[in-house]
Image (cartoon, rainbow, N blue to C red; front, side, top):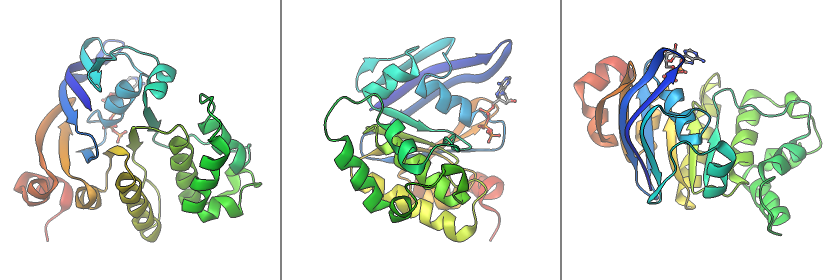
Length: 234
Ligand code: ATP
C-alpha cells in the first residue's frame, strides 16, 4: 500500500532521513520505533506531505505521490495524527470532528460523526465542550476520531500514548487495534515499544536517520538488540 524507497529528508543543511526504505502492507499495523531524534516524526511528516523529500520516492497504492501536498495526500487516503495531537482547543469537540471531514463532499459526514461518537462515547458526552477542557487521553481520542472522519485508508499515528497515564495508554492501544480490525491500515510511531509490538504485525527500528532493524513484531520482541535498547531487561 505504502512504499518508501531511499527517502532522504533535510531540515536546511541537516539531513534527518538518510535513505529510508519502508513498506506498509494493506490491512496491517506497522510500528516505527527508535530513540528521540532518530527521525520517526520526520518520516511521518514526509509521508503526510508536510516535508518534501530531497531524494527517493513515496508510492501509495501503486502511484508515485512523492512531494504531493498534505491536502492532496489526505484526499488519497493518508491521514496523520501528529505528535502533540494538534486539536483546536478553543473550538468544541463537535467542531473539531467536523474539521476532520472538511475536505469531503459526500453526504455521509453526519452519519460518520455519529459513528465515531459511538466508538468514543466520551466525545458524544462532551461534544459541546471546548476541546481544551478535555483530559489528555480524551484529547488523543478526539485527535484520532477527527482523523478517522477523513475516511483514511492509511492512518499515521505519531506517539499517540505520549504523556498519558498507563490505564489510558492501554485504552489507546485497544482503540488502535479496533480501528485496524475495522479495515484501516496503521503506521504507528511509539516510544512504548513493547505495547506497540504487541499490536503490530511488523516493525522497523530507526537510529540517526536510518532503519537499522526490521522484522515481524514477534521477531523484534525477541531480538536481543531490541530488548536491550527498547524493551528493557526482564
Ligand atoms: P522524537 O521522538 O523526539 O520526536 P524522532 O525520532 O521523531 O524523535 P525527529 O523529530 O524526526 O525524530 O528528528 C530527527 C532529526 O531531525 C533530529 O536530529 C532533530 O534534531 C532534527 N530535526 C527535527 N525537526 C527539526 C527542525 N524543524 N529543524 C531542524 N532539525 C530538526
